[in-house]
Image (cartoon, rainbow, N blue to C red):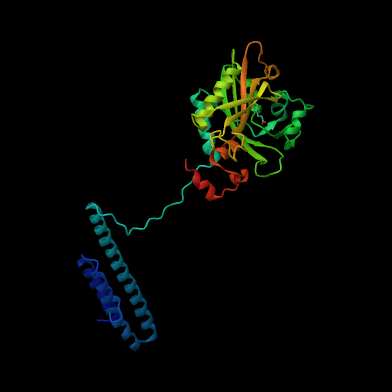
Length: 343
Ligand code: DAH
C-alpha cells in the first residue's frame, strides 16, 4: 500500500472512531492518537524523507488535507455533543453560566424626545391634535401674520437666520398658528412641537437651534379661564399634582392680553433652591388670548370666535425636570448623558 492510500486509510479510521464517541473527554484522546506528536499522521510524515521531490510535495499536500479534515471531524462532533449536553442540562433546569452573550448596543430616547412625547400625551388626553410645520418659514407667517410687520420692534428680539428674501429659519413655532387657522375652521385645539432657530450666541442657556411646543385653541367663547385651566392641568400632569401655576402680565404681539407662565419649582416644590434661583418659581411659557389682529390677518371674524395660544421651550422644561444645567449637553450626543433617559 502506497503512502497516499495509507493516509486515506487513516482518514477512514478517524471517521469511524469519531462516530463511536459519546463522551466529549475522549475527543482529546482522539486528537492525540491521530494528530499528536506521536500520532498516526506524524508516522507517515516521518517517511517522507525517503521520497523524491515531486512525490514529497504530493504526499505532503495530501497529508495536510487529511489533517485538516480529521481536525474538522473532531471539532464538529465535539460541538454536536456539547450542544446535546447543554440542551439536556437546560431541560433539567440547570442554567448555563458558561455561555457568553454579546449584548448588542441599544438605543435610548433623547431627553428632549421623552419630554416632547410626554407633553404630547398630556395634550392629546385633553383633546388636542398634533401638527408639524416647516422649519424654513416664510417671513409672512413667522412675523407679519402674527401682528409683527417689518417695522415692529419685537422683530429685533428674534435674531433671525434669513435664507433668501422673505424666507427664514423659523424663530418660533408660532407661525403654525397662522398656517393652521388658514387651513382649518374652528373649533380647533392643536399643539405643534418643532425646532426653532435664532442667531443667539451659544452659552449654558442659549442655543442657535432649540425646540418649542406651540398650543392653539380657537372656538366660540374661549376665555382666559380656559387658558388658565388648560395650563394648570398640563403643569400638574407634567410636574406632579402638587404643582401650582402663576400668570403675570407680559407682552407678545400676537396675544392680547399676554402672560408669562411660571410653575412652582418641581425640584424644591416651591421652597426655593438654586434651580429656581431661590424664587420658588420657574418661568416656563408665554401665552395669551389670540390677538384680534391675528384673526383678521388670516380671515377669521374676531367677533365670532376667540382663542388662546401658548409657546413653551422644551429645553427649559427638560433642564428643570432632569436637573440638566447646561443646554449644550442636549446636542453633544454624549452617550453618558443619553443613556440616563431610557423611556
Ligand atoms: N413665540 C413666543 C416666543 O418664541 C412664545 C409665545 C408666547 C408663544 C406667547 C405663544 C404665545 O403662542 O401666546 O418667544
